[in-house]
Each structure stands twice: as structure tokens, then as C-alpha cells.
Image (cartoon, rainbow, N blue to C red):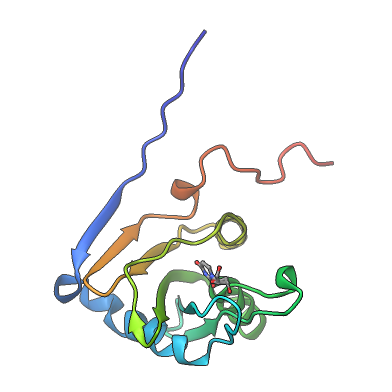
Length: 158
Ligand code: THU
């Protein structure tokens, strides 16, 4: 028998000490919450993706009366970025949420969004910094892979 132990490094910054290079990205994620369509959960989520060409692409959650037909902010932003700039690497994504007019504590991407982030890391052969933006603190993960141990990456498929 052997045991495997997975560790994930998360850096936690107060909002004021967030790394300078991500300030605009964080603001963009917060701004993007204004474009959410969330009449069912009332959780307005914004995401912003930073590309190597310096562009920031925003997304927000888009809900649907048939619940599974909606999409999270992270995937809206990532798919939009990959559609507009298919040859440009993704460096980072920031996520923020607002409910009842107030920014929430940090929220974490769902499993499906982590899987999509992982695919984007695989596609561009480059880790994506993930910034989870709460009203007081920013949590930063090194990569999607670090948030999804033992993930399915397509190995085994013909
Ligand atoms: N949601 C996101 O957009 N991103 C997350 O990281 C977590 C959840 C959305 C999906 C749904 O519209 C609402 O938040 C409640 O789950």
C-alpha cells in the first residue's frame, strides 16, 4: 500500500497588497459582475481573463430557466477569450461576485470551470494564475492543475 498526498499552495493577499500586475484584472472581474444575468441565484459573478497580448476579456454568469443551460462567468470569459484570440496564451483569471449590491467574500470556481481551465492550460502549455477576489482578501492559486488533483486530461483516449 502507498499513500499519495496532494498539496495546494494558495497565497492570500489583503486587497491593498494584491500584486500590481493583477490590479486591473481584479477591477475588471468586479466590473463584469454588473453584466451578469442571474435572476435565479441572485449571485452576480464576474470573471476577467488576462492574455499575453495584454488584453483583458470579461465574462459574467448567464443563467437560464432550464438551470443546466446557464453558464458560469469563468467559462463565458475563457471561451470568449479563446474565440477572439485563439493563438494567445492565457496568463491569469480573476473572479468576483456581488449579491444584494455588495461584493461577497471570495468564491471558488466549480468543478466544470476547473476542468475547462485545465484544458486551457493544456492547450497553451502554460499554468493560469487564478485570483479569487473577496471584498477583503484575494486568494491566488498557481494553476488550475493545482486545484484539481488527479484530473482527467484525456490520457487513455485513442
Ligand atoms: N457561478 C459562477 O459563475 N462562477 C462560480 O465560480 C461559481 C458559480 C454562478 C453559476 C450560477 O449562475 C450562480 O453562480 C450560482 O451557482
